[in-house]
Length: 242
Image (cartoon, rainbow, N blue to C red):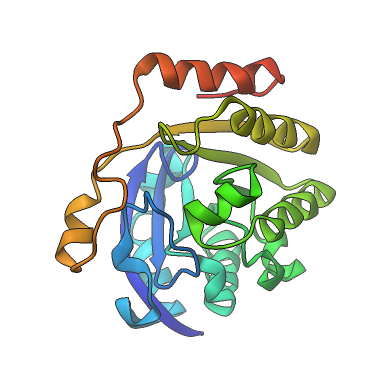
């Protein structure tokens, strides 16, 4: 299967458990105001690649990955914009390389993930950007319903999910918004971890390099107390939040 790959990396701690081989596929339908990888928006931002090439690269690190209790993650951009390549990579990472597999997605294109793709996915890293629907559209440029539908589908399948929520002061931090995400995540029954991610500006230089105005340039990063308070909301709902 051919597709477009933006880049790959080895990472620890942010793309699933242990050390991960992470394939970042090009293209994303969302336009998140806080995006730290705006250089992955379009398919043209990636280079042509075959699944064989990506798997061969990952195979070089399998011994090291296994020792760390890690695996392989397909990320983006939005990997479900290229479901064929994503599905083949997950299948081959799991069955050829014997690695734990993770899919990093907003869930907006969850309908493109067929049952075979999800059967080869051990963990879904699901970004829920907002609970308030108008705010979700403001933050991402897209609606929330597809993400919620995908989350419910994963719950029905019993697929393990880590929810990720970016805390942006003055944008995603209203108490009712955090409470809504927490209550929904707790209702699913398959969410084993919540990552409350403090907004940062590390991608601002990429926006500038692309000739784009970073919409949150004047937004402060959350304080440690603000982040801890948001995590406490998830904990109150019985979720493990970090």
